[in-house]
Image (cartoon, rainbow, N blue to C red):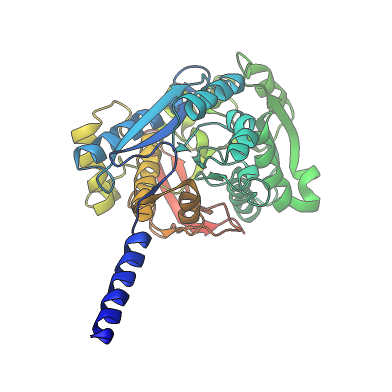
Length: 400
């Protein structure tokens, strides 16, 4: 009898222990029925071309909710406009954290705005993840363990362009237009790293602009006057299109590169004019919905089904829409992995142990992270604009 009683007590103890381990654990912004996600997006202002990212993500989360949510919880996606103005970014993020009490910040767009909120969100210990900026500052877990990008770093992208130029155009000179902030300076550092001691000879002119400038016409005149063989256009969409259009109007015919942040057919290439943009080279890690090679691709079939049902937007074939879709899909996977332990600590645990591929990304693109590596995407493939769409060439390459 005594042994039976002890056995019974042991079983109860184990059951109680297992129940404790299975208990739900939540932080602010999470309930049994909801996960509140905060976002800030430039729905207006000089970088409003990126607004399609927010619209795509809202549609994706609407799809997730209609399909039952994440482990039974619906996503409340709270997205505000900051006009690509850092003071406004700060205001909106404080509103999200202190008034709306969101669980995490997802995919805030822009280097200047994210830089302005980085210290605040890390002091608050709120996950500041899937940052839409390639600044190297997001890969700093020792000082900012709550901030982590999704966009490949601008430095890594520039290193890929510089390596290509070294191989294919070893004797040609370079002129660079860049945004005068972390975005532009990180790209510059990538070129200087690869060109090394030859950088001062290879780069014959560097001209910067401010996001508050009306045009970049004077910078284009300055760069053309230096007579570089290659023009590197490190700009956000509005200025990238302006620069290409002005280069074309001047009858100048350099080899042209444009940063991935402005590799949008609709918002940049067509705005610049297809003939002006023809031959422009950029780098990508995503599949193009208009590329016939992905006609029967399972990942792109899922994307096409999504846009048909939930996102009948004119920008659905734009690269920025694909980016928003891929980021929302990845966040959904991470939240599912959290199970019922929806704490901010657990979100960062999942974010710093990424090992996945996304169906709308190019074959061979691996998404990896660790507690000491906050740069999950570091591979690219080059592509060239043919007047209607971008055509991939070469193979997937890393930045190192």
